[in-house]
Length: 151
Image 1: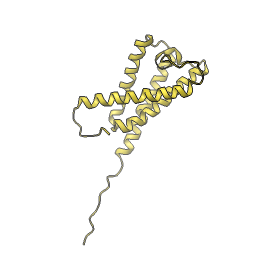
Image 2: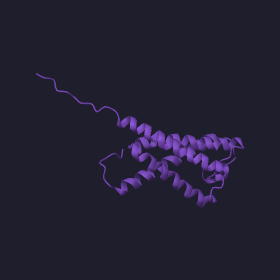
Image 3: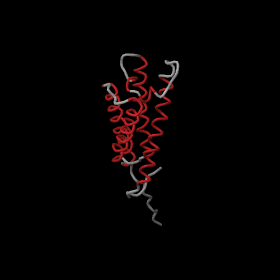
Image 4: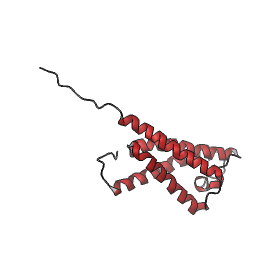
């Protein structure tokens, strides 16, 4: 999609960050609606940005944790299509999670829960490693070369 020559293009980088962030929150919202929305009377932004909702003490908390981890797996797939380069996957996954941290700080204060930190660090690792794996597999494919038939 955005693959091209290795040149410094800040508009391309910003577009990739915005695209990846939007796709991540779209899928996270979908998983939250499927897993958490069936357990609570009203699904709000609290479940996406408040650190207190990620708790292993309740079934709803486990569903929220699963939503974040499934969104990280989907994020790796998005990096396969949007970023397309294995060496950039860690940078973009870290940027996504740092932006998420800032939004969480604005929304509900500094995340004081150890579970929140573990879930987000594991999500960062899943997204970057799986994204790198998928991109490396594509980068290592043989380039098809057509040989001319000698006549």
